[in-house]
Length: 462
Image 1: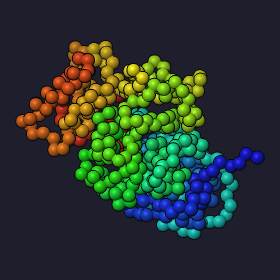
Image 2: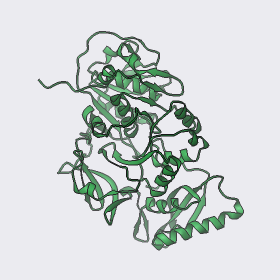
Image 3: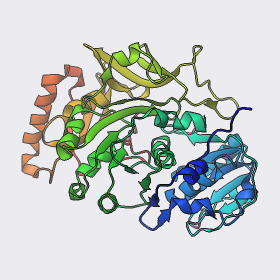
């Protein structure tokens, strides 16, 4: 007989370590889940069902996921920014018949048609009825689409595979992430904490970055992850000096050299790395040598079961960490004929290292020449006066488009009288590093840049 796959509850029950889930409002001792429940004694009502996790807080979602992995047939995890008008279609695709909410979950008529269970951090004694054990399918939403998001199917095995391959830390970590755990990047950190038997600090809805950094310091966070945009915003806060992580990791966007160097300067005793992952392809690799991009040897060899190849400049991945399919009728195939997932990320090879150029769908056409905004941003961000930038197109009657750069400067910015001088310096920096058609036609200084709920720069032109 094939042994049953472990569940998140198994990791909780087998660990002797004392660990916590924290957010701004509550402190949960994870070991209380051995005999308690956050589902009001109604866990058995969700056994064998397809369940939507629609809580407003990350903490409630975390507790529900621990309790229902191996109990529910399917778990569909809704991020908090899921459009209300898309929920009906997502429920239909998932064939859901139950929903877990909390007190602050927005009302939706679709949920009224489902078995409804409330999750609350105030635990009660668990129902001791033995429940059938099954392999739960996890459905995660993709990001970056303008219509109804795709649902991607994962298993417990595909989700925890990168964790099993990770090297053990020389300290007992306290994990935290700027990501929301209801998206793939944040879910990976939640799973690392549960599988590894460590504590985790979660952010709360609407929590200012300064307050969250103070909370990270209060709980002694040692391992912290987020997108490059998350990290740039954190570096702009004076509260960043309160934390002393042992490891800082970036993922979700291109990690340019300027940001990697800034993090190393801020945390000289920490390991600074970046990872490549997507909801569909899973975690492909981590880079911990302090350099942007990744060694060409990563493509030439199979690493921890992960194979990569470059097709027409785009990175493709095949591994046991990838999802199994898109869920629903008339959905595209997730794999090519050889089982590789096309990530849509474009790379360029220089010497023995690949550099990320940008996304297939984000190209700007300047007079018939393709321009990746991220390539220009990486150059602008290297200027010592710049904290972050966003390159976007502007219509032009001759070339069709030119590129414009919105720039956030370090510190207090510049006086109006000095803007022209700083702009000229940044443009000169770009002319020295970029072909003429990639040099911005104009620099616009802005106090901040919009960051989407995914933690990535909000790009509205791609």
